[in-house]
Each structure stands twice: as C-alpha cells, then as structure tokens.
Image (cartoon, rainbow, N blue to C red; front, side, top):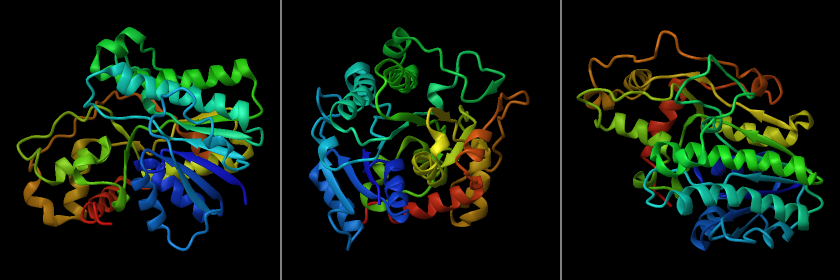
Length: 334
C-alpha cells in the first residue's frame, strides 16, 4: 500500500486523519514535536509494524531544513501537511504563528521537490480563515474566494493573525506549485470551526482545540448568564474533515483544488440546544433563554465541491456535539 507522510500527527485533526489513513490501508510516517507524543501514538495503535506506522520528531517546523531528512524516510507517494499553530495565547505573532505556518508549508514543499521524487500529491490543511472576509462578508463563500487580509493587519491585529497565517501559507503553497512546477500536485482542505470527539491520549481539558473549547465552555456553565456572540456561523465535524484529507489523496480529480469543507451553519444557541438534548446532565449549566444570533441575511455558502468530488456526507451538529461532549470524560487518559 502507498506510503503517506503526515505532519503534526498529534494535532486534533491530524490524529483523526491518522486513524482513517490506517483504516484505509496506508502506511504512515507521522511527525510530532516530541518523542513522548510519538510514543503515545504508537501505544494507541498496538500491533502495527514499523512499516505500517512510525514517527519522526520535528521540533520546529519553521526551522530551515526542518523536513529535509523526514521526506527521505520512505518512498512517499502522498504528503498530508497539517502542522500549523492555532491559538490566541501568543505574544510574538510573527515568531509564534506566522512564521511556523508559512515557513513550515514552503519548507516541506521545498524538501519534497528536492528529495522525494515519488510524491504525487500534497494535501495541506488550510482553513475558512483563508477564505473569509471578516471586514465585509461576501454574498457567497466558495473555493474561489480569498481572505484579503494584509501582512500589517496580521502583525498588528491579534484577531487577524491566525487568518493571515492560513491565508499567506496557502497562497505560498499555490505559488510554489505554479512557479516551481514540481512533480506533485496540490489540494487544500479549508474548514471553519471544527468540532468533534477529542483523541483522548493526546490532550488535556486545558489544551483543547479552540473550536471544542467553545463546546466545553458552554457545557460547563461559562455562558450560563448569557450566550456570547457566535462569530463565525460555520462548522464541520473533525471526522468529516479528516476523511476529506484522505479522500483528497485517493481521488485523482482532487488535485489542483481547494475544498471548502463545511457542514453548514450553526450558532451558540444551536450548540446549547444540542447539549441539552443529548446530555441533559449538563442542563443546569446552560443558559435558559439564549438567543440565536444568526443574521437573517447571513452570507450564502457553496460546499458542493467537497460533496461531489470527495464524496463527503456531513454529520449533523447534534451528532457532533453529542460525541464531543462524551469525549471530554476520557480526555487525558493514557
């Protein structure tokens, strides 16, 4: 079976991508930032040979040549690059967010071109952040739309830093393929808020991904006195996002495309309603009279490409919230 290099294998989305790759029969080498995380991954998948699953430590993806040796570990046919920071606890936007996203992306593409001639396709985890225009929403969001964020905005406005990192990194990837004309093609996966069950052995409740942190906060009473603004009204389940990554290497027609991977609209009120219905034990923590703040004239979306090309059938918000809340009880167990 084909060999796949998966970067950032301990990440929220990547951990699910890894499971699906193994289910689909691929041989996987994944990168992690520490030996401990790599060992946890191996322990969670017992009985697999080193040829089927192994890991390599890449402590700093922004470092020059970070992936130069990793891409030589096997005759890879595919690379799925998920490694990129997403948090709002940074003090240096360039060093902590922008550089790792951009240099990590261009660095791995350079390494593949130079030393991995067997690679046929690279799939990159981008984001709706690389599509959305938060200053003035488009009437319709699809794969043709790009976030107009500038470098100055990304450096000086904390809310724009992450959006800038994903936008600049994805643009750099497409420009690399266009200018360098490597022996591989490219596909990107662009999800909005990603909810879904947490891989228990890689996380703690103090280090939940930003999207699931919202569900946890709502379930544990942090919004009991009133719902905060929803902000971005789009979501997707992590398992559907992960499957989209794998399908993007399996489907020949996926090359050269962005995939706006969203299940549709949601609101904080809808999340609360789903928690109340699926986990009534949390009812006392939930606001009683939350208001759905979805605008009547909310932007339209077109997610037909990810359905038609990749064959993704999206889970419902209720199912995703149910499984997410259930997973919190196992977080941190080894």
